[in-house]
Length: 309
Image 1: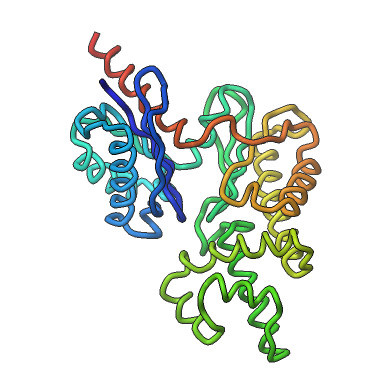
Image 2 (image 1 turned 135 degrees about the horizontal axis):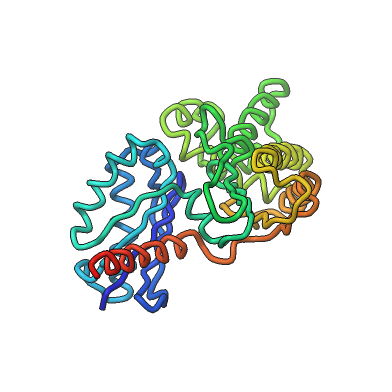
């Protein structure tokens, strides 16, 4: 039996799907982050290995039965990163044809051939889209130093800045600050050092706390999420303009770890998306990016067989 692997790797986790040639999903798994520009190439490769070993064990499939894989990884948009990562992956999966692409390309691949924009709201943020068949365009996805506005990373950073400044002024903790510190298992004095050492482990973990607090009515949390919704909608607005989709009907799909975590945030985001794209069909992706990656891996097999004939 020949099988394929599909990976969707970001700054917080890596999702993996094991699929057979009939497009049956045999198993799923998750592992740690696999953005090589944020965690390093060896750590990214280790996350792929961990996820693969898990799905193989669940389905009782050997490594030699993996005929192809597609890994959509954040950070691979840089040519040097892709060229460095490809041989590392090929060495670990010697029997498999290997395709690397960005996690954004995976998300767009789930939408089919109709005009579409996908808003990715997770550890990072970006919008990617096309006018149907043909080349795609993107806005955002530049990482925490140059972009990722409205992302979970950005919300977490802004939340910590807000509660720490409030503590400096008042000398006491707000309820939101207490909840954040409990989640991080830190006190205020320890936060700066921890952020300096591992910001990717700190800031995204704060977002679920802010999301929960917003649903409970915390106004500081709600202000943070309104700002995030504004910034994410601005990414879509810019891409609508670049793709000349203004006033036309297209699919506007949302994906990422921020979606579905807070009723308040989801409502705020949808309100802003309807304002910038009133004729768009707003919804969620019809399949996971990891499943889309597995289907792209199946295409590698088909293409190789067609070339052989």
